[in-house]
Picture 1 (cartoon, one colour):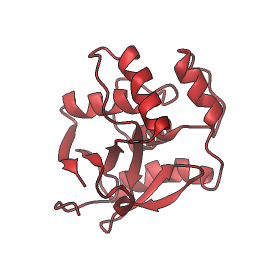
Picture 2 (cartoon, rainbow, N blue to C red):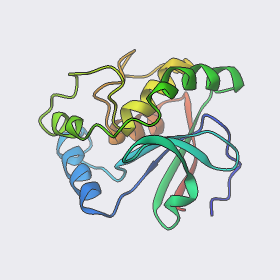
Picture 3 (cartoon, rainbow, N blue to C red):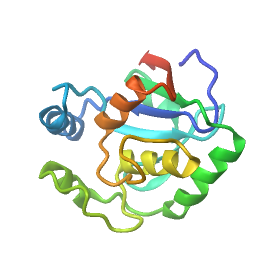
Picture 4 (cartoon, helix red, strand yellow):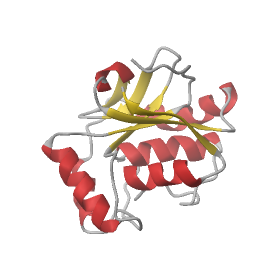
Length: 170
């Protein structure tokens, strides 16, 4: 599937060819500085075997192989190690099993995603939350709420603190 050695703490973004993915990319394109959006979903890789932790219908573990045939980008924060991975996961694991907060998508749509309720995070907020608690310096500062998949991917691409280790079709 993906010909790269994965590590716990790698993060990913994928395209979504379904209606929800198309709508997310449309809104992100309208709101982005570069007027471009490819990726509408993000998550965290938790093992070298491609296990993931992400916000789907529920916030839960998954597998990277679920994105076979889709456009995917995998990034690695340069400060990630076993300890920083554990720090990041410790702060988000409590959300496991919660339903996806679909109402937050409407806040993103209307430019109000800074309104935040504890433990109510869309995929990109969950991924940013993990990175901040792991110790990554992010353009959003210490705020993970309101970050979209497009904003995360843009940051991974321009930051000297992230390396893109794979981009292409899974």
